[in-house]
Length: 111
Image (cartoon, rainbow, N blue to C red; front, side, top):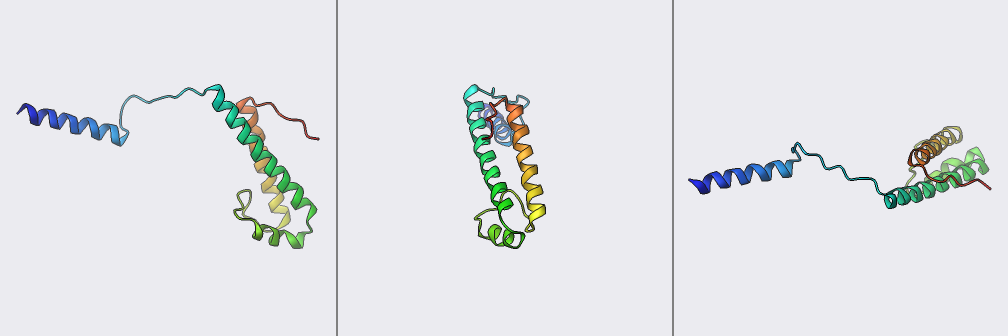
């Protein structure tokens, strides 16, 4: 009888652990190394978006669609016309800048 009760309690405890239904939430503190790595990742993403905007601005409208088709994974926009592409890219740039401010990253001056 004791073995059945022990097995039942063990099974219930394991089900709770594996289902994620515990009343205790694990809050992992945001360390400074995490912040630095997030800042570096955000800086790289921002540089990528800046380069993308420069490239799109330099292209004539008729070549934007071909340029976007040649990209391996267009993660900045889903549009194919120049004006919506630039709008999406500037929106992504603004999101990344807001993320930089939220994290408290050092903002590098543009040259």
